Amino acid sequence: MASLDAMRLAELTTLRLGGPARRVVDATTEAELVEAVRAADDAGEPVLVVGGGSNLVVADAGFDGTVVRVLTRGVTVDADTCSGASIHVQAGEPWDDLVARTVAEGWVGVEALSGIPGSTGATPIQNVGAYGQEVAQTISAVRVYDRREQAVRTFFADRLDFSYRHSRFKAEPGRHVVLTVSFQLRLGDLGAPVAYAELARTLGVQVGERAPLADVREAVLGLRRGKGMVLDADDHDTWSAGSFFTNPVLSPEQAERLPADAPRFAQPDGSVKTSAAWLIDHAGFAKGHGHGAVSLSTKHPLALTNRGGASTAELLDLAREVRDGVERAYGVRLVNEPVLVGAEL
Image (cartoon, rainbow, N blue to C red; front, side, top):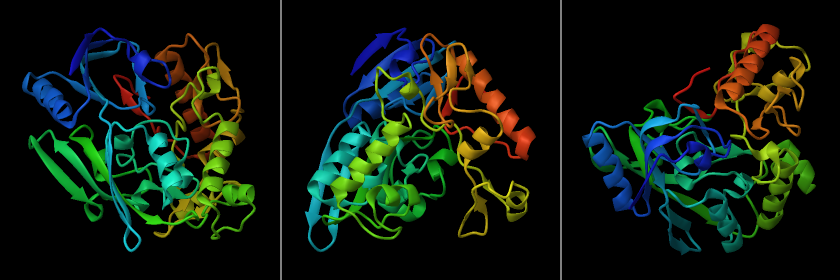
């Protein structure tokens, strides 16, 4: 377990923003991860657990405490032709590496989640989803270190309280440190039924039909690259935290007040989801809108980007401008998806 002093968190986040940490500890095993968090808790130090850093907005002042980097690796596999593949993944395993392996192995259920940056341990926290899939559909269990109880616990799927971009872990921020994530995946050459219209069109199938796993992955990667959502050090549109705002979930009455051409997606509970990107664009914030070193992506209005040399304060000013402008135009208050550390909107 390595310990570093005064590393800038800009080096650990995909936004490339954030001031120094008092101390950074690299945990390469599950035991080191638990010990690093427990030791900091026992010492009364603030703790920030960082995986891929793709969902963090860290203040320019940095973090006056211990940052624990989750660098654990490994995938344990149980597979048979009857029950499918049961895989157990260390929290630090890069997510897209795992998705690539599932496609190569013929494990079905996460192929539409290709190209998402970050670590596997982060995926259950906000129920990561894209292109009609969510990890809630395939996660069977999550093992965590419970900082309050100082014990390792396992939560099975029915105890995870998954909903849109939400889980029991997000409801209690910081309490649980994910150690491993278990997935139950079907076996086959075809992906899960395509549930997203844009992806279906790209694949040349109807919504609800299936396509080869490898084709689904390549189609999703192509769509994400076109929106600046696949990390590329040379492309400032990817210097972001992905989608900065979640898609609003509205009451039927709220949805009725939107313009007639606003997207509306009925939800099982009677609520209506709309598109944050549509609201941003139609409120007057086009792709590329920004000031100086920060702007909306030139490829997608939902990503706020660092054009090089930006500060977190500048990025948050832009986020407030967009959020407040959408609220003035449509009466809908956008909610940030990334975790804010030492900062607020």
